[in-house]
Length: 88
Image (tube, rainbow, N blue to C red; front, side, top):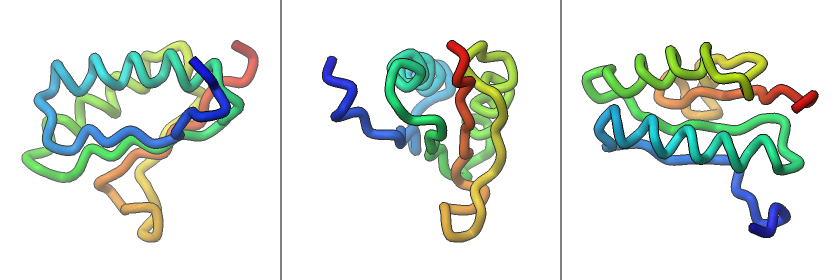
């Protein structure tokens, strides 16, 4: 993979929880090897299951230093902004 072409956003909007978390895991595997220190996860609002699952998963990921809901100009609560650990 050419890490210069890494896109620091993943769109999980509309995915089922299990598939969304699998995609997120693969995305974070690539993200930690890129030069990015912050990535954006788009999960939408929906019924809240995907958003909740994503945020719980991020708390347990060894790649994640912190995460937060997006600010209004970033997509608000329909996105999660993730700060990656740089010491990986």
